[in-house]
Length: 346
Image (cartoon, rainbow, N blue to C red):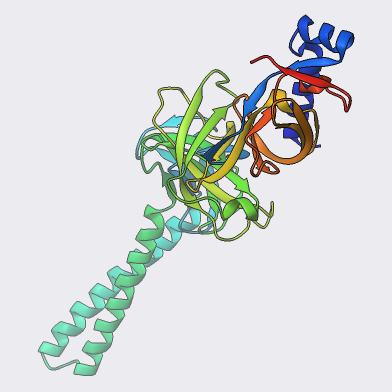
């Protein structure tokens, strides 16, 4: 039984208890004449909200990694720490990297000396042009090796690309890590927040970029956030089988954090026409199937089956079943039987 059914059943229970008050109950018992309300069936173009849930992420959430492999020597931060731009987050053990750099540096210095010596000898016509060209090539190779070693040394640490927060550590000290393997997940505080949710395929096709959304965060139950769809995945997440959709939140002064759970309602821009009736008009309901009484003339009524879609405030959006129906019976209809007579009390 879905969420809508539970809500409708609860509403029917309340209606059954309260009805139209003592006036309806006494009339039904004494004369089998039931006072009921006459309700006009309204039509409206409405967007059916897509209800889902997800978690809050930083818009600039980034996986930071070392550019070279090595053993992690030191991690300078903990999860949740706020860091400034260019702060060192983690570094590799430099034993091997320094040895490679020194080796490349010595090789380059030797290549420079060899080139200068052969160049001088070539000017004195002692060394051949081929020898000069060979030492020049060796110097170029040695220079490239030194640049590679210098690059590896310079990138043996991870620094914060901007002011932000350490969201998660993915490696530990003394652990061997490969080049490009994420070491920490970093969230920039200079960007706004998003909610990543998963939706099924039939809902995905209804969603477009810039569709509006309402977000409720468990950490702030009294606040309702607004936002819009900014990213729609075109392939299913292999872990969940759902399609990822990201909603960018409008600016807020509240202190949000990555990982907060959120309930989301997405309002597709494409609208559809529904019939609207009050919840008090329902006499039976199960799942999306329900029954109401349609008004025939001034005092007749007949039972109709309808297909309901979703709640709109205190009303229900009806998918089908009320075509060419102008009026139904509202509050008091739950007391009717086949032998009842009605009196309109609007």
